[in-house]
Length: 437
Image 1: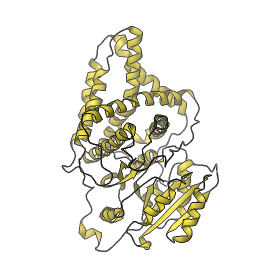
Image 2 (image 1 turned 180 degrees about the vertical axis):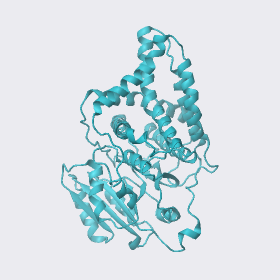
Image 3 (image 1 turned 90 degrees about the vertical axis):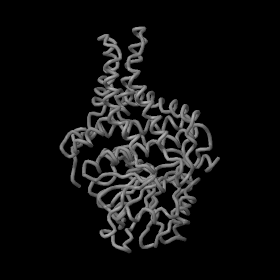
Image 4 (image 1 turned 120 degrees about the vertical axis):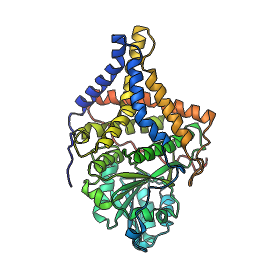
């Protein structure tokens, strides 16, 4: 492994410094009585970078990253792919997943499926053992309950056994098109980058919460494509990430000290010079959580892991390993996703304490306009589960939904500053609803 600068200690100190600094940015304009001008300037500068990522996509909005020239691909070469799944208490969905994966159109020599039973106590392991007896391309590894490393540890347990050129990581609730690998074959000829499939929601019709999550995932993929088009940083999203095996090994595998292996690996791939491309079609479908409590727990985990990667890798992010354009992109979205919610919190607290009007409203307005712009740019025709119609009520509810991150980020950041690292990998339950329910 070619190591990068990693500063994994001092979590509480780093979180406290981040929280205090961000809150002060929201409070100081009230103390200095400068009005909304600082927030307005910040919104203009930040908006100049992020708005093109929402409005500057290829016309079709559904094109995959360009494939290498045919002359470099070879006419018949089919890259070998290993599919990896970490399954913990997934008895409700695991048999459907295996059937879906074994239906992928690919010769057995080019496709092997590896599923890790990560200490399940609901019969997942028994189901997998039974299926393994019937299918020679299915390989099952069992880990005891309480094994270290969470999901990353489960995935790392498989790495020594792999022989394929690519590693496709899926969640246990994933659903993919049988022709997925046929579609990806031209892209898999280029082992210099990783791929992330667009994530879609197969139960968007369950309720309003799943519907807005479906829109959020489409918007996220669109913005990731825009960041890449403008030479910014694409990101992995866990389910549907396809990584060159040698690049993964070069980065040291999956980080067992993180609860968001995808975000951590994104950082390490970029720092090792491995870009990430986003594939719009075909997507990987998954089950969105349908209850507010489950959503809150899931997003707490995402927020904590998202912040932790910046705390861990900031020395490398400031080093020459990242090109200036990438640094600006990473900084812009760090400010948008993590700093701004705390600035808004400081602004609200100062407004209430001083009985004055909020001053950070230009930043909030810019964020909402950015979200609407991205929603309106989402293609209306896609493969995979249909995207909810993006109009009136759906736009309004998605904006309300997006604002909940203004609560999640401060809550998690303050918790990281006040408490020792304690969170375990809180997996999302699957199989509670059916597709189209």
